[in-house]
Image (cartoon, rainbow, N blue to C red):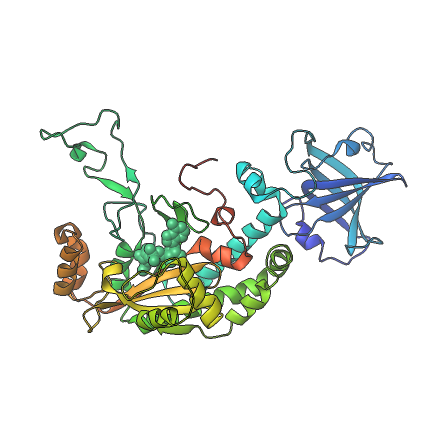
Length: 464
Ligand code: 4AD
Ligand code: MG
């Protein structure tokens, strides 16, 4: 590489040493003393490098004075301690080479804050803001920490398909994939669309979860995880739902629900520890801008045990809370955001793992408990974002699973390969799915999930 990262340059103290950097100008200030300050950012860290450009530069009048926010340059110069407040060092330019000028009246990212709503309209430029730079670095660190955690714990990374004929969650709401002419599809004699003529010879959709495929590998290789995009066509326009989001799904053989919960807790703890160790200045930025309690909360979670309670206990706690909820609580109802909020923010003042939900509100693959009315499910709830993880021990008894599928209106014949895992050497196994964007929300304090993924897909919006 020809250029040194600004993050590295800012660590140097060898005054008089040469440095060569490249980046985008954030601001230019012209001093009366006959020189200009350029604040240069290259995305390697939150901080800018202060460049001092003197009038003696050959292109000072013709080019440097035309460098407005957003323009791109390479600078060669000499490091010096900075006499000004706010930075320790500066780069005294011996040459400034312009890559691209930036028209000041047209460029939307001038000095000063632009609202998150407006930034969503300029998704191609928002990576140039402090907020998106910091979010992107945090997202990257959490992704790498995911791999380091599972790799250190002997999990295999398995790539599950994006196009699939299965419906893992059995909840409808899927995006269909087809190469048929939707305006004029081939039809069977009874008038129904003839999917035998479609690309895959059958009806397929974008995956809602890699779990069912993941189970095949856990039931052969022991411990696996997936980390990939998942898709849900629910029409939910909330600040924590996307139509395309990334999910991390570990699956472990010879494991029960308690093992699953312990894994989830250890995983989250590792993520918070890595983030605190690697992204200090980005976290400090979000703490200052959005959430004064951010770092303290991550530090607590990095060491404190998570509260565990059964669904039945959670319902009892909600009913005796004295709170009035928009959705009244009774045994059998699904927990709503307001209920999760009470459990995490008021009752536990931290994360809660709720286990053993009523069978009727959970997916077909969850293992039925001996009480005949609950399943070995768990949700991990976090303050602010609510459900971040959903998981369970899997139903490993063939007859019980088949009966449950029929009860859910699913045809077991369409899941014969999944049932084979129970026919041929069935083992107790468990797993969970963590919504990656909700994790990034929790770790940044960004309130809207549209602001923690590079290009959000939500109902009515697939721009960029
Ligand atoms: O609870 P869910 O639906 O669980 C599953 O899909 C299981 N198959 C996972 C498993 O056991 N392997 O989804 C898991 C997580 C949720 O807890 C939530 O964090 C996130 O995925 N999630 C979403 N995130 C953003 N937008 C959406 N529309 C989401 N739906 C679920
Ligand atoms: Mg769930």
